[in-house]
Amino acid sequence: MNILFLCKRFYTGSDLIKERFGRLYHFPRHWADCGHRVTVVAADYKSMKSTHLQEPNLHIVAAPFFKPWAGFGAKIRESVKANPPDIVIASCDSHFGYIGMRLAQKLNVPFVFDLYHNYEDFGSNRVPGMRWMYRKALSNAALVVCDSERLAERIGTYSQNTHIAPQATDNTVFRALDRDDCCEKLGLDKNHRNLVYVGNVDSRFDENTLIRTVELLAESGHQPRLIIAGPGLSDLHSNHPLVHYLGRLPQEKIPLVIGCADLCLIPYRRTLLAETCNPCKLSEYIACGRPIIASNISNIAEYLPRSGYLCYEPENVDSLLASISAQLARPILEEQGTALLWENVGAEYLIELEKLTTLAAR
Image 1 (tube, rainbow, N blue to C red):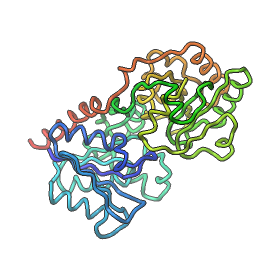
Image 2 (image 1 turned 45 degrees about the horizontal axis):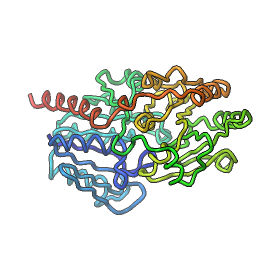
Image 3 (image 1 turned 60 degrees about the vertical axis):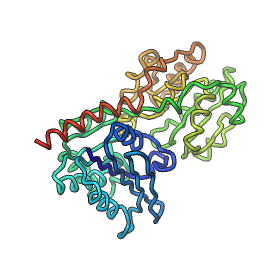
Image 4 (image 1 turned 90 degrees about the horizontal axis):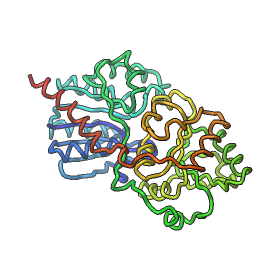
């Protein structure tokens, strides 16, 4: 099977080419390992030069989106000519879904729209026409793949044929490490109770509630240190005496940051984006063998069978304080084997793709 995957190079703060990050890399990589020929054409908004990553059965090309020649559109045409696809998949935003839909219609092959968020909630959808493109792509997709059950429920008005492919992790990278060794490698004090968050500090991040809770923990003698690895923290809080702000780090250092943790956090507010999300960090935390506190949003608690009852009420300092205090006093760990792995989720995804191409061939 020839698979064409359309997306963007930089997403959720990471680089598809250099970091081989997330579902946009790992699903195609797994399908290629199964013997299928996969081409990923990724739009690059930051460069006017194309970049290639060639692996067995997998070719990823990042091309400038706004370059009329030798850009994103040209690379799609080249790919279609060289390896006519049996199926087209698009991800990352509304316009990619629309482009993928139109291309699949032209080629008379199935179209799959892959959602790792409800793209309708992205800021880009304030641009006139974007919401229309999103809904059009949903309505015309042979299959819509969602990263959470809540997201599938949300888009059910437009598509009845959905498959859940949650965010996952690579357990060769994210695994249990010695806490003190990780602290030493990152130059962090071993004597603090380290509360760790990795990822973007965006509109979902419950910043004020979290900072106030850490202050109360300090007042009660817990010696907390809030460690944040990811872009976007305000200047006010990045300089807070109880915060150690690492900013954005390369992907290979994230397991070290998680390894420093006495407790890992998913402190999200109840926003539209948060209520349908399934963050990669959830499985990364579990795979690294660290206790977790998350806000009670989306269906995150369902992935925490042991500690999900400790999920706190968003934007509620008392609720977060009680949950963190309980986990620090008597940590409850999830079984590391319950961490979702990209190859397992990708295998189920592939079954759905094979069903579509089999039906199309009849």
